[in-house]
Length: 139
Image (cartoon, rainbow, N blue to C red):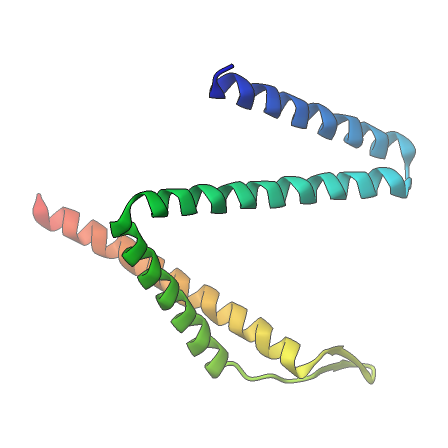
């Protein structure tokens, strides 16, 4: 059985399970068992896809020694961006009606995540603009 047939069968099975769970949820009303099953199924799919992506990426990197250096540089750059973002973030406890909603450290981590996102968006946009300008100048 070739890879395409295996993928087709896998997609059909995943789709069938999802449809069955969806019907159970819509027919059962507030049946928490069907909702829990759907959430578990979604978690399995997400973590499975993530694991496959990581394994195949590592396999690709190990197969080509030149890519190991580039991957190391990219990881160090990402860690530097996270470190800079963490250093720039300030934590502030969030209270609502006298009850703590977000701790100071949680607030700092949220700020770090937002700053990392903004920096990566700026880098992505800058690289797209630079590629477009370079392509326009080469014509």
